[in-house]
Image (cartoon, rainbow, N blue to C red; front, side, top):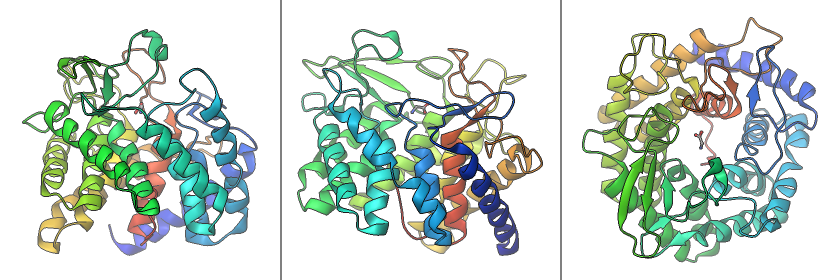
Length: 377
Ligand code: GLY
């Protein structure tokens, strides 16, 4: 993408987010409905960090105080949920919730409460580690109406590992890092298939650690290829390499990236699953594209220029497709930035809508193209 084009898109983004910020008030957005308006979820919901994270990136890039003011309060609200429920109201997604709130707030402003909350969340996440199975437990019982998820791990957790790597650096205590690496090795062993496609959920025996089965989750089926799961793996394994320097994680990130790039349709906007019986009339998932693009930029940044071009070009191709085919620039009533995201197709929930994490990763990836140097994940 030429730098003038990046500048133009960025200018439109800043204007769009400024309007969103005025209208959002206290809402914690997750999905925009048909009239374009974002909902408001309780802040225990896994997406509660993305809107504040988007505001923090805008603040960091523009130094406009309004973005900081609107981003400020969220980590304190989310923290309340760490102390609720028998196992806690939260789960492995504390990475998605505290990195774009508490941790970035601490990074950008030195706020000590942000640091404390980030470390509390990292301890919480580390406490979900199953040492026999070498995985971080994903959800609590009752999530998705399932009553025994003790042995479940999911591919999405790959990106939450950044919280543990951050905590290890911040405290100079390598236990956090050991847990993250151990989980990432389980991802290599049980989630990423030889062809670069990935499983969404893997169920283990929580007592013995033995592999039981792979479950379909939000994908079409246990052996399909849920595109957002692919995207979580690309970005998560690239980060794991960035934090550890261990070649096997970079190789894995590249393998999943190659599969993702090969599966992209002509127009560059991924389908929600790459392995459905027919792609005809299947919905797209722009959020998978946005997450993958941001992860591909990370891979590109980790390589020599001669090798990085493939990943950088693919990321820019996806971002250009999202901008031109999914952007709401000419739809002022739409609060969301991107259309055509799909949350949970098998559950028929949030199909072909705007989703806040799609918006977040699109903004994050565009910020990286603009030269943003801080990292949230
Ligand atoms: N982490 C849940 C999802 O990607 O829908």
